[in-house]
Image 1 (tube, rainbow, N blue to C red):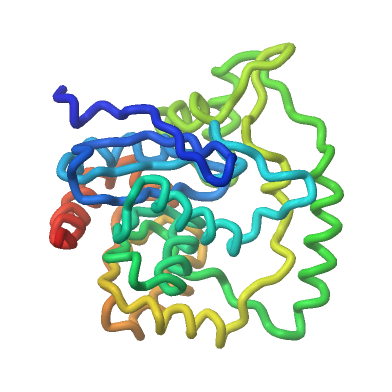
Image 2: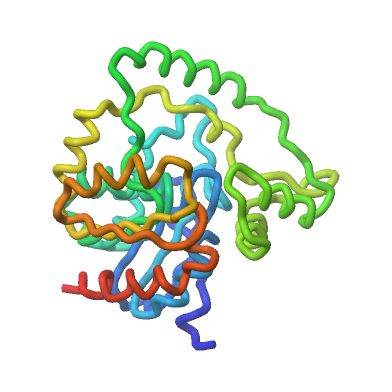
Amino acid sequence: MNNLSVPREISLDLSGNRIAARQWGNPQGIPVLALHGWLDNCASFDRLAPLLPELNLVAVDLAGHGQSYHRHAEANYNIWGEIEDVIEMADALGWERFSMLSHSRGAVISMIAAATFPERVKRLALIDGLVPPPAADSEAPEILRNGIEQRARYRNRQAKVFASLEIAVAARKNGLFKLSDDAAQRLVERGVRSCEGGYTWSNDPQLLASSLAKLNSAQVEAFLARATMPIRLALGKSGIQDMITRVRPVAEKCANIEIREFPGGHHLHMEESADAIAEWFRPFLISGEE
């Protein structure tokens, strides 16, 4: 194994807040920021990153996840704050322009960040995620109420304690999205902290609260229209239940988005399709070099 296949633990300072990250590949290579999905962490890219050695790939633990800082108790983990974080991360790395490799909610964050700051983002390589499901305008009051009530519920939620790492891995493996043993092990090792009685999740419980506001169809279309850079979207044939039927028709309207389906579930990039996805993404991301 060469040095480009071994990650370096780094941290980024975002206005006094610590973002933990793993830097893979060539530090002088093509800059790519990698964003994981909801309740995951940067270990999401442990299988994929070594297959992309030409890149200066920085996979972060988003705020509230993994080993990164938690937002203030009165703050909210909405997507708008994540966009601001993305730009601050790039600034902390000294990247004026960069590409993004992202999964699930991280893919949604990346697309919106690219649409908001298109002059900063060269290319998007996305996995099982593109845009959030649009909400009807009439749903806004109920969305706001649900978000406020859930924030209050989760703010002081008692953390679940696992007597061993093995028990935590089994729980993660059989969670909302089924995972292989290896994928669950990687995410858990990065996503727990020791406590009295064993281990507990390091994620901020407030991540479980729903958003206070959601985009409507016209807003989703406006962001897509601004994200004119080349985009590749890898979809899992057995991923989120309605992902392909919901996202494919939207993506097919955009000439700059190329779609390919791969075997596997929602975490296909951590499992059997990792090699095939890397083979598809690698020349695409390399060709973004200037």
